[in-house]
Image (cartoon, rainbow, N blue to C red; front, side, top):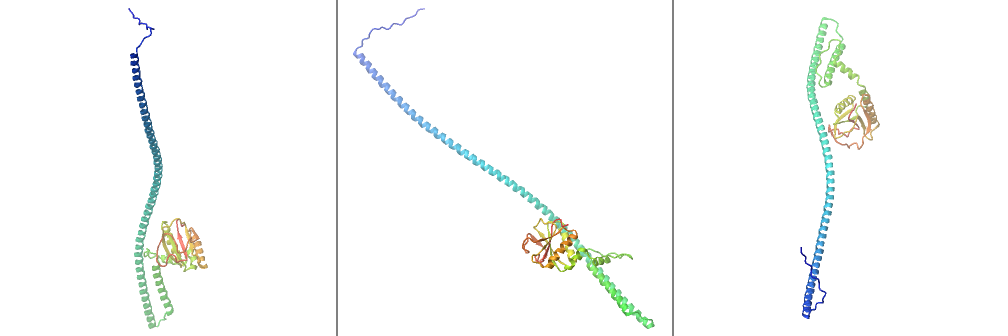
Length: 357
């Protein structure tokens, strides 16, 4: 293997002539000019790059600022949407409550309608029963009239027979009967006829002609007469206030109030009072039987109201005495009843609410 050794540089001075120096100087000038041009180009490129960098940085910062603004806008919008969603949930809950309340009111109205239909059916049944009682009452009245006419004919026949017997006895010379005794018997017979007619007229509706009792038994007419002779304690205690006007307010929402109102009205009518009954709708929350006195009434009316409360309590009613909460001519709801007298004319009001007994 062979190797070559580089030539050793000679340390000998190289002599150059002026032309070579000028060539080298021109070359160096050109090189300097080229380097200057390169430097200028580099500086220009650096300036352009720096300007582009600043421009790009400004664009980036503007984009970032726009992105931040959009983010802030989106965040504010999301907050507003969250608030709107919360408000919507609240409104939805309120609407659900209103719907629930509406369902409850609808159920209550359906119950009221059902109760109204039941009351209408009951009233229709009562009207039918009343018509039947009216027909029976007319039949009983006709029968009583027929009995009265038959008794009158029998009385006239008895009078004629007695006159004929008297004439026969006088003709035969027999002692005559006492004329006063005969007239007394005729008057007693006419009185019995009148009492039978009055009992047939005053008997309760729906009562039909009763069969004749056997000998020794008590007739219904006799029982009715005994009841008329011996009135109930509540009627007896109220008769001394006969002629007192009273208005009976029966709550429409209470099922047993009409029956209680009819009973109290019958008691007052038997005692000689002047009761009138109205149906009071649109009012609730009243309990028992409340006797109300008009402000400024006289002592007799006040005493009559107190006696009525005591009599009702004695009869088993949950009766109390109170004051009308407003003006005597002002009331809530609606009153259905007679037009005259007005519901606000009577000095005493009897309000029948729930659980009157």
